Structures are given as C-alpha cells and as structure tokens.
Image (cartoon, rainbow, N blue to C red):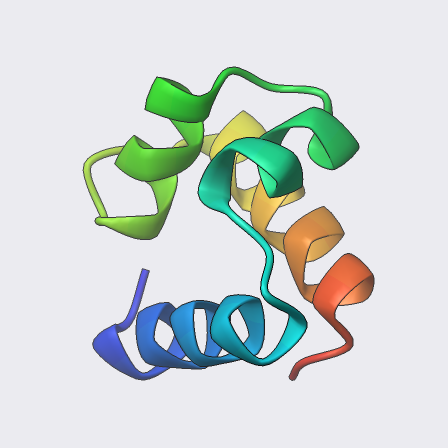
Length: 61
C-alpha cells in the first residue's frame, strides 16, 4: 500500500473518530490483519480486495 493511501486511511479514521478495530470489523477481518494491510506488510490479491473495501467504506480514492 502506498504511504499516501496509508495517510488517507489514517486521516479519515481520525475524522470519523473510528479505530482500526472498528474498521476491521466492518471489513470483516481481524485488526492485526488490518494493521498489516495498512502498513504494507500484506499486498496479495485478497489484501487488495480488502483495500478496495476499505476505500469504499471510508469513501476515499
């Protein structure tokens, strides 16, 4: 994941006063896995699907 997208996700979570854990629940994944995706430690096909879901939930591009 690009740093730019990472920052967008973190900023949007702050705006919404939402935690990684809350977002992970909405996406349907564990919070450690969510953290790995956002921190760029996971980038496989399934992680890319989750990134798309995260972007839709947070309404970011």
